[in-house]
Image 1: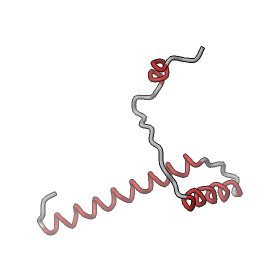
Image 2 (image 1 turned 45 degrees about the vertical axis):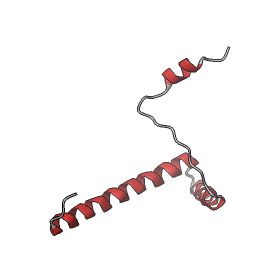
Image 3 (image 1 turned 180 degrees about the vertical axis):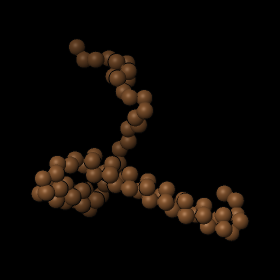
Length: 80
């Protein structure tokens, strides 16, 4: 007997948000190429691993840019 929907919901981590992404064929091809390159080097990566790493780098870059903007605004005397 398959589990009830309520049982599945209880098992989900409350701190996890699930999202899906759409990729173009070119983007998918680049991911596939990265995965194969890593495999040649003896590293087993999944698309999820690659996307998570790229997303984290994007967040880090955005945080740096925000800090730079704050510094510029402090110098010029603007708020926010």
